[in-house]
Image (cartoon, rainbow, N blue to C red; front, side, top):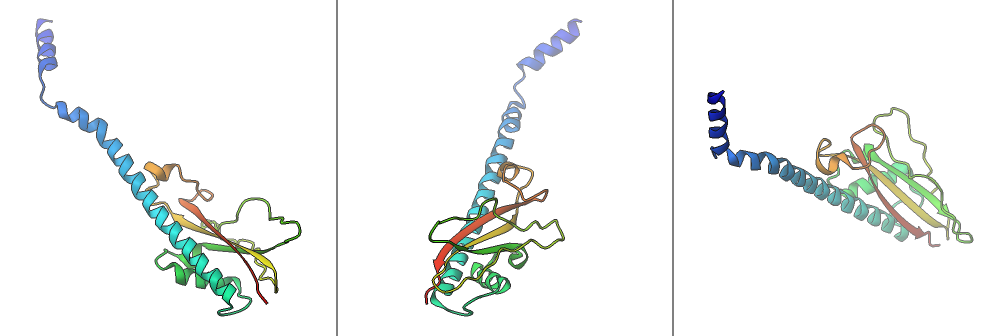
Length: 178
C-alpha cells in the first residue's frame, strides 16, 4: 500500500508532459477554426463567381447579345463560361426563368429548385424565356461539394438531399426591352 501511495505522490508532482494536456485541448479547437475558415472562404469565392456570372449573362440578355430567347442549355453554358473555375458547372447548375406579373407582383412560392446530384431523374424545369416588355426573374442554383464535410462549418451547411453538396443561389431580374 505504501508503495502505491508513494508512486501516486511522485506522479502528481511530476511536471513532465504537462504541455501535452494543453495541446490535446487546443489542437481540436484550432483545427475546427481552420477548417471552418477554409470552408467559408471557398464558399464565398464560389458565391461571388456565381453572382458575377449570372449578372454578366443577364446583361447579355438585356443588351440583346446572342439569342433573344436562349434555351436552358444556352443560358447555362453562358453562365458557366463567365463563372470560370467552378467545378462541374454544366452538371450542377439549375436555372429557372419566369415572368413576373407587374400588375400583382406575384412571385412563385415554395423552395428554389436545385439539382440533386444523387438522383438520376431530370429536375423539372420552370424556364419561360418571355416576350417583349416582360419583367423576368432568373434564379440560378448551383450544387457544390463541401470541402470538409466531417468538421467545422461543413457539418452545419444546409445539404441537398443526403449528399455532401450545399446550394448556392443567385437571382437577377430584368425587363425585355423592345
